[in-house]
Image (tube, rainbow, N blue to C red):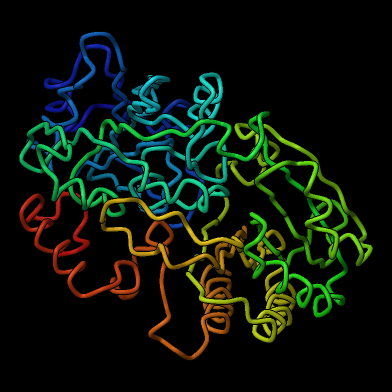
Length: 463
């Protein structure tokens, strides 16, 4: 298949070892088209995959193509897990899957991340140095996009959000300039990158803060992780016990309470994925109220922090129609939670292909740790979330499943719209005021967008 004139022009400006795929019949090209979700998936005009090699760390191809080819290039920074990464046949994807590296500075307690490095890789390298940081709840989550968009984790009450870990960045601007963003050089831009970093340029590198493993409350570098499974018809008694446990800030608990039908039996169940930070020997006493309910399954034990997302390969696999519906909540409303159970049952009855969908309440018994600086992140007052996993396979049910998700979120939010908050890494639709709360904060973001990306090369968000 012949290269289009645009792709031929791109070939001129990138390095010789930069792989460009354009043949739709090529198995390698078809593999590049696969993404975590098939929602809005398109067939691109080409896949440009530069290699990270010595002497090429700044990767001039990245910012040269932004300047010469803006409007038809998209950047896929972590293997295509973003719902917003597709571009059609009139454009080319810049795939950073071969452009990735990690450098850990144990003495400074920082890590320098480049390209498409994944969360698992970061966790392992940090643990080897006796460190950890806030990371996404999935091994295949792209680390840099996670940090830029806020980033919640199981350690939020200990570390703060992912965006709170950002020390500095390297950014390719809409004008084609490569900028080092620090507190000294561009403090306003650094403020914006911490929580809204995907909208101002192409971030090729981040330096992030790390923490000693002892901050996990033990000398093993572990957390306690457990699971409790109950029949769905026991939801009320379980939810009442869970409310007391969730609201008890004397213990560092966190996790998910999920309405789902887990494999292989696929019986409607209430599944609690529980975490505890501290001495793992204390976890059974902390979760004693759940053990006392005599669940169908009750299991748990200490897990090295770098392995907490292991065993989730199924959810990380590419394909099917998947997305997260994540909104911030002010409290756990037992009555509202019980109301979304029949909604989930109705969805499964009408859309059998959505059997993997789970309506999830996420909690942290302690508030997020606040940094000693201001940023675009505006969710430090949130420690409860409705974090639904939407997952189905039949394209005919695309809108139906989303409608059920929207209804469940509306119930959990409650009527007071002044309390509503959207997780900015989970959506790019709806009122932007719900993602970046506060009139002054939003005005500042809009001003910086006009300064750094006035034509919307990096999406029209904030314009």
